[in-house]
Image 1 (tube, helix red, strand yellow):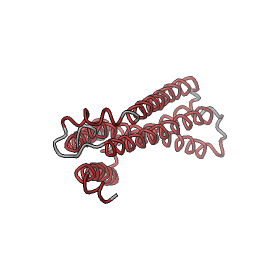
Image 2 (image 1 turned 30 degrees about the horizontal axis):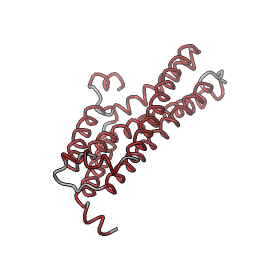
Image 3 (image 1 turned 30 degrees about the vertical axis):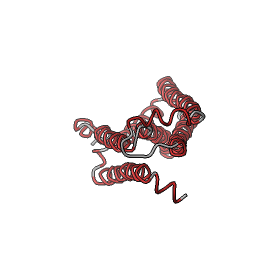
Image 4 (image 1 turned 90 degrees about the vertical axis):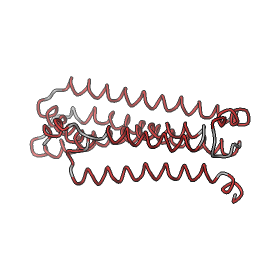
Length: 226
């Protein structure tokens, strides 16, 4: 074990730095959201989904609810199915590690090429994709439940509690979907890791830069939600 760590220290250190960069970004995003909720696209969507649920349930817009939830369910189902296909692809690559590891490391100027390291990289990618599949599956499940809850007639004494419950469930489904997408994003640096640790670090920096701009709320949207 110690020999493996010493031999592949560059690869392992690069992965640790990549994971730390993603974790640090998520902590920064959390801090920024607590400081200014309107600056986060995620928080704006939480408010928007809650407002949508209240409008649909009070005005009995059942057809709109069914169509919107169907689109959300189909999107999450598609992403879960794609995760399964990618998992199968990773398993196929793992069965050919002795043949492909040298080819994929042809641009590797820092790390050491070996079948063991190749399999470890694929194993980490596999866990990432399984996590994405789980997140999207949970999103589908909760969207399915919301489809029933949102069409239940409101009872005047408990109207506010009913709406709050459906709002919470819909936002929970949205959070699972977002987590699944984050797991998808991280597969890009992991894929570049197959070429070498320097590609992993470069792809991670590009991904964090992309997410920083993706998570920012356009000023006009923040003003509307405020």
